[in-house]
Image (cartoon, rainbow, N blue to C red; front, side):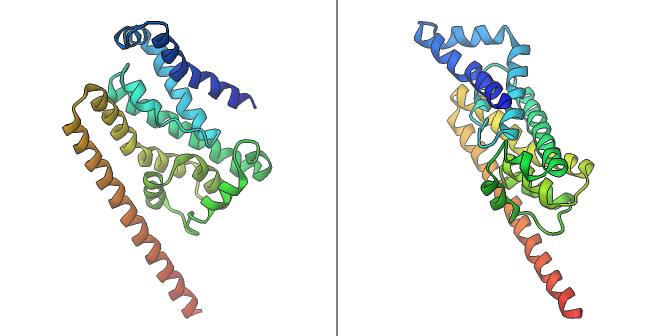
Length: 222
């Protein structure tokens, strides 16, 4: 699979090459200086990695975020994460919506997609999708939504962009803080992330219960 080969190449660039340089006697400071001199290459590689990891699940690019934060400003890393994740999610959605399960099966496991399909509400709207993006991994969910929902592409794209943004920046700044060794500030970032996740999960569950109640009321009236 061409995307799989490309993903392997980008992963090699991000993880294997630095490890080999370290084994060959380069200090961490020298490796960072080498990458810092090529911010455009690092940024493009990182965005591609986020994109490919979303389309070719179950590759995960999350560990690359703190790595990128060692070379780029965390605000830029967060922005590139949003762009990569959103672009990959849109491609996965379009593949599922337009070509269906036969083509989806070439990228991901249909059994995994089926598991995520059960998490997609019958009446998926903008705000519910934003919440889903904050608590459910991007990759398989994107295919599931494309297969079973009728949400318009524009609404889907904007909701995805907003939904992946909080943790894109939390991971980016958290990675930068971790590399800087400020563990007290890192603990605060973990608390912020956990709070955001918990609030999104609570609101998603509340909307789910309200939807079930509304559906039961409609069936009773009929």
